[in-house]
Image 1 (cartoon, rainbow, N blue to C red):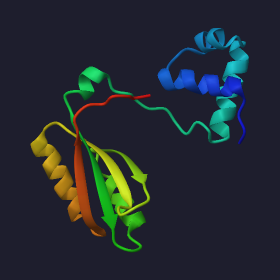
Image 2 (image 1 turned 180 degrees about the horizontal axis):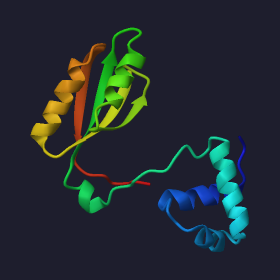
Image 3 (image 1 turned 45 degrees about the vertical axis):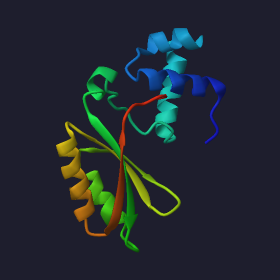
Amino acid sequence: MPISEKDKDLLALLSENARMPTALLARKLGLSRTTVQSRIEKLEREGVIAGYGVRLTDAFEKNLVRAHVSIQLAPKALSRVTQDLHALANVRSLHSVSGTFDLIAIVTADSIGDLDLVIDRIGEIDGVERTLSSIILSTRISR
């Protein structure tokens, strides 16, 4: 679905703060409150906005250990492995990728020991053939 520049501006504002009041969004965009509400409803209905979530503060996140876990799958195991990974709360996001590995999971844990256990659990999932982990030391850019 093609979206207008105002819709892109609206999405950018919602990405910064999805709880921003409609009246404030309208002021920032130079539109009426009713127009902004209609645009949000249209973006939701058209599937552009799939939902809203919580973004953790840097102060909280810096106390977590994070890692990229590259995952190589057995043939035809994608849907089963995806379901099993979805059930692990430590898996923050999952990406299909090209190359030697099939997936990259972004994983968080309270400590290195906990991270080790999570990576072990990922490796034990039926259909996972191999993993390669990289601990994230710092984030240089996050948008």
